Length: 229
Image (cartoon, rainbow, N blue to C red; front, side, top):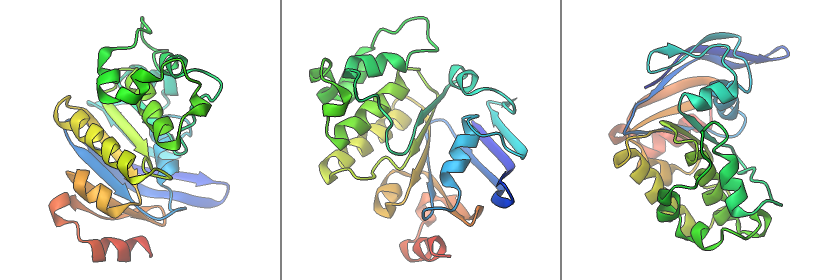
């Protein structure tokens, strides 16, 4: 599993992450909630090695990943879907997907991608920039899955997406966790979406985890009060 222990990070003199500890287990969705600016994206960038943590540990299946480059973490099973999707607008759907296979010996697109996202299968030759926001989000998830991850990290996958696509993305996330056994770390502000998917949850405020537990214990009023701290 993913085991994050006492992670600290600074930007200049600002203490952004303050002793963050959390876990994400295979076959489960861990939802991380919090308002904008509390350090959620910085945490994910630290997990991926895009930003070095000042102190603390990130481990996967018992292996410490401190100092490992992003591509090394991907090779060990990390898949990352950044906020804002960040697909390549001038590349086709198929070309965008193949980019996600950079750490594999083959860039062949597995049939499972088309099964999860039928719209992408029908649009393989269309440029990424011509897709709707929801279709681009599906493409970003599909690109991450091309690396055959064991841990899928999703940063605000519902942002700017129409409700019907949100529901479809939710079904895919649940299927990836429950049927394929992925560990999923879901950063989200949409409480109802997180509540439906999560097995466990954590709330971040001012760079700290201020509440966590099983999803069955999530309470909308309490979580929203914590998010506004």
